[in-house]
Amino acid sequence: MRANASWVFLEGAMDPVKIGVIGGSGLYDMEGLSDVEESQPETPFGLPSDSIMKASLDGVRLAFLPRHGRGHHLLPTEVPSRANIAALKLLGVEKIIAFSAVGSLEEKFAPRDFVVPDQLIDRTRHRPDTFFGDGSVGHVAFADPFAQDQGGLLYDAMEGLDITRHQGGTIVCMEGPLFSTRAESHLYRSWGAGLINMSALPEAKLAREAGIEYSLVCMVTDYDCWHEGHDDVDIQMVIETLSVNGDKARELLATALPRIAAAPRNEEIARASAAAVITAPEHRPAETVVRLQGIIEGL
Image 1 (tube, helix red, strand yellow):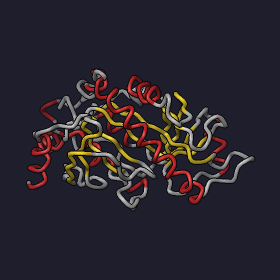
Image 2 (image 1 turned 90 degrees about the horizontal axis):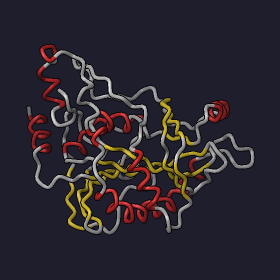
Image 3 (image 1 turned 45 degrees about the vertical axis):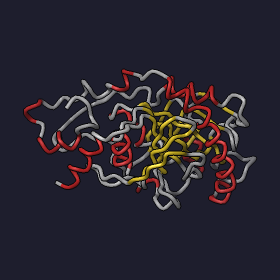
Image 4 (image 1 turned 60 degrees about the horizontal axis):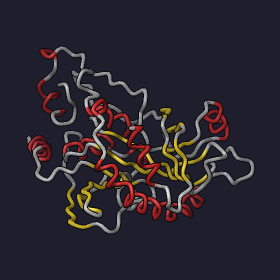
């Protein structure tokens, strides 16, 4: 039971970090950190995408994890999201700020704009997207997939920065790694979606099951392929925009972190799984209960 001992150690670790930052495309590291500790902890769901950096930024403790690994070596489908969220939860994380490069499905969301969305459509197909299973069944409410108060703090923190900001909008999370067909792009627009990416899920679902407030900062890189006045999206277009957006993301974090650290915890999200488990206690396999200790409340 070597792995089991590893995650029990994490759960009881000293110096818990309450804010997690998940870096997306173009945000693989952070500058200006102090008191840095780095480790790649094993979880009941394997290893996270990369080592997790516990550090301080202007006095605020955080845990930073690059979603695709440093050097960007993981496809969106290959990202070990259960291990990522489990590792952050077991380190004590209660709030996650996630960044993602996204395509725009609306004229108003221009390349290099930042958007804090409030709704989500799931078009993924090949990703484990729940901690439940193996004899334990739970159904967690997910009507509002993002932590709205926390999202508001992120939006407010952009004021005065060199960022064109937007609050609200629906993001489609597709499987990838190919970009959308033109027909798909127009379909998503007809649904009222304004943004598209490959990374919001299953992160948002797993964070909710784990009782972690999750907010997504969308960094627009392109207009997908629906916009007749712009070139169809390609990887060179995305890369050209990533470095600019990455610098803006670091600036936003420096402003937003103290506000998010000072905000009270959303207890409804914190206890999202507390009453969600419907498997009778006597029918819950002991090994499943042990695996989810410290991750899922209510078992």
